Image: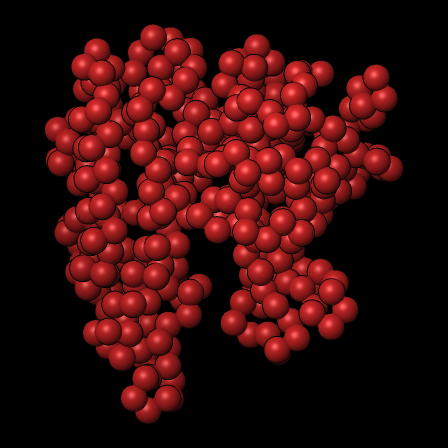
Length: 350
């Protein structure tokens, strides 16, 4: 009863707790927070100095007593305390203007497909410790499909590919459930590592992670481009130890990313191979839907369409699909009960 009373003054939230970014959707207001999942901690005082964009700007530039923590690895919590504090910071920020002394929102949050019961409990505990009154965990591809306004409750097969920061989730969805699926630890962050490794091995050049991400976004591609692209990249020469600048092109970056891209494509094909034929027929007719930041890799949709002989489309604003799905579920308690994972604590919609 007291929880329900507190909930009257709180704004219910949909959260995409991603490896790379955390997005928060506020009921009736839309997406208010889109920040990197990064926390800066002072080890001398054990205080959190910055969260999100401010903390990311410190990456690779800190003195020894300042630690930059990425509290999520491959879509699951690797640092419980930092995740809890990061979530509390975002929840408090949402409620700043409403002057709520003790915000107790209902939270719908996305989790990867291959999450264990222990990891699931860690997410629930972190969200509840950060101030939520109720928490509902939903698989990210399901949220992405709901966010893309797909008819997930119908008896139609939908193939959703969510290429996030830490994981790629491939799921065939029908009747508000996941029928067949695969989850890979290869996604946006792995693409960045591929570029860093290629640069080191081919050019003897050490790159920073943020610089590698910028290269991926500007000239990374899955297929040859109509107009070749190139850009200057800067790093430390491994031979001389001094700063060095070279020019790379899209063909070289395609070579760097080729193994990871090929792995994702092969796993999508493998998921189709274990999917019931009736659903495969639906997918052939309705196409494959791409979501997540990795869906923006130039030409990936065309490569996948060529490899599978199935139409492929990128969801509208693929970066926010998951959090928009979480936001839509706040106003649909019946669908939320259908798609939410069983809670480790029990409970129902308030």
